[in-house]
Image (cartoon, rainbow, N blue to C red; front, side, top):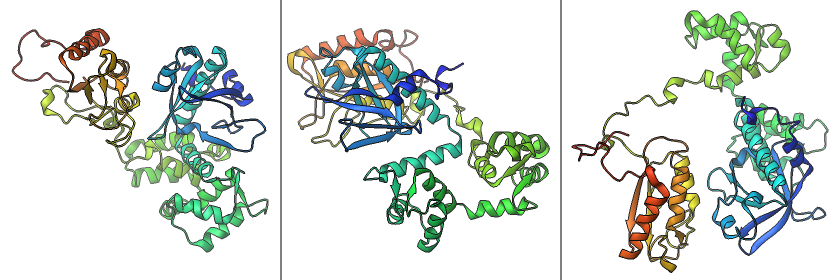
Length: 422
């Protein structure tokens, strides 16, 4: 059984996260400041601030995280390697273009607890059902929009948030629903009240109409009614009866409805938004194309100026550019190499103010991440501007770091008439 997939509530690492820890947030070799981190009661929000008594604080959702990296796996943590050993260091990697968070724990056990705990929570977030994902997406928006961090919003703030979420609404209708969701009659919605408000505000009329067309009482779909829908609309054919039972068990949230072999509107919508309700054939999500043709017969996912995270004139060069490109399945990366100090070639956008990174570190990163998500070969496009001496250094790094991973001769020992297949 996958240990990451087990229940998190009683996990000792998650419990430690909820109790809180003092971790160093590191931005550079000279900026290392202590912050108090803890996991909030919802089990999906990480909160931190500069002091227990201070008012200012920040928070982010576990669903914003892509991964946790152990040790000195960022330029920032590498720069403090002599001061803080690898077993104290870890990096929280965010989705998209958001900057990563480099952290240093007080003890190896504390670092291990946070690494394992966060991984467990990421796994939990990634394996939510469709309804859970949508609810968490709404919660994340609420947290981002809650500027004063008081955990509640009035109608004016909610209107602004809905505009940010691209929700088209009639203001009078939205106000009526807001009042309905405000059970405590305070004029504010807390986070779970807002999730409920968002659901009723964005209920899809076309889904409701289909549900009403097949429901005898307008409240539930019986097993026979759901089977009829599957047969007529979804064209499930002779397996529709067995399929209806499966879907009720899988998507119906109300236990009393499951016991009656029935499906409510919430279960119906959860089914339609799931992979089971998708128009796409699931088997086509896997690789099914002919991959035996020569390399030149394919479009290859390629990256330009892979090392750059920002603009081409003054932007940041980073190993993270290579990591993110390779994790997205990129199979051709660019390495612009120039003469560096102390005989070590560097990678940057030549004749600009972009930051320089070591060629050696780029090749180490390619070695570690080239085949994490794809088994197909990686083309390293070397734009070489180095002198002969540093070209020799480059060649040595390529051979020593990549070893047998590097293709240095024709596959069958003979000059081919065409390129090999992937």
